[in-house]
Length: 361
Image (cartoon, rainbow, N blue to C red; front, side):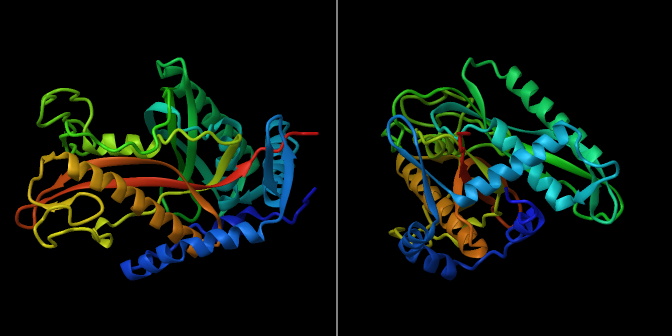
């Protein structure tokens, strides 16, 4: 066992906040991507855990994290903590998020529908950055009940939680109460056959989106006026989220959602810079730009894949931790003001650190 050597507050604080790099640094990071992969592959302390068909590799860190989660879970489920025992707020957030993902997440991209729930909130009493185990236990049961109830309401037969992101809602507090939230992505319905980021076809003319309403449907071509419950942003997100890659059972911890500035990502393949057409890797155009043609749809599909990977590498570089992409929400929007306004498709990707389940022997 790892005893007191594991300190989630330290583990959490090492990457909780990071500074946005400028675009020149982004390009440097992309250039050294191959070096990072080789370095990670050569330096992991690997052990094997064979299954029936091939060998599954897990690390000493996977074992360390799993033991810590299980110890915490046993402690709150069996009420073995001392009366009045406390832990830091950062530790509580880390453990709650890790435990929820350990127990409920399914990292499988073969789903049709992505549903994101942000309705859970819990007021957690806090005193000098410390929280009581009684309150953390109550929060964990409330969070678990909320997730199970939300899953029950999804009408599909096949449904599962992808990843949950536990955060502090209000950062300005000292003593009293703080509110914690969980943003949870759910997949539902089965997607047969691999997606592999299939390109858009000649009839894929889509409205950019409509902010949080995210709809508009086909805006030109033979399908004009159809599928009004979708839009360009949703169609791009669907392809990014669904390459249909099946992996060994695993879960994420340390969930992060960076704030992405599209204007940091100019399109290097733009044939006519300055003409307000495919200027960036995601839609960022002056004026009201309603209908995207198939060329634009593909530029923004693969462009957003590049953005998501670049942001992942920034996380890796800033934290030294091997972050992976979990899923993304994308929203089209129009911002008025500043002359003619601005039309954009904004990505909201989430990332986590993957850990493989280790079966008891």
